[in-house]
Length: 239
Image (tube, rainbow, N blue to C red):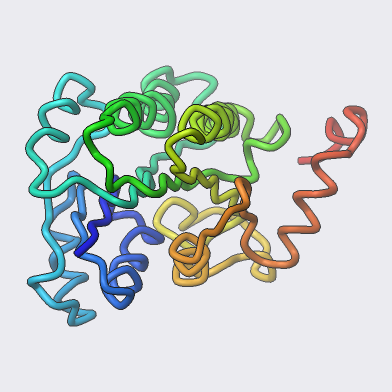
């Protein structure tokens, strides 16, 4: 049975992928700092206990990543990096602690653990690495450029990783998502018509194919294309 390793498994999207992967016949290693919440979710959704193993994982504890990977009960065929953390742009500009944690959780932690996984050539089972990124990283905007910069860096890392792993026939995908109804966006003033449910994004993750950038939702596909070509002067007028 092939194994899926989910890093940051307590994120709203990541949790929703677990029953989907199990339904497709995979076993799952759900790794997170919040194991009790994951186990409560598994019980609530009646996911078979013999199909999911939980492991403690801290994206910011870089010196533990090699040991964490070496201790896994099975080498993964699919890896999903979905660890998340966010503070507002105003807070990030004046409180370095929040900015530093965003950098470590959303980018540095991903690079640390994914480098270890990607360079393990003994894992001949590895088929795919998926990263949960964001449209916030497509263009710098004054309302969220600190958070957006970490997602932009993560997407570029995944793009290079895709090229690096191409000879081994390992696929790499960036899920470039818009607004998701989640713990991270709770309390933010976001347009209801643009909010997507975690389960919808999870289906895009599990169904990832050959395309590198995957933008879930037709409205967000349009927004993504506009952002890619919008002149800088008009980007500067965006919120």
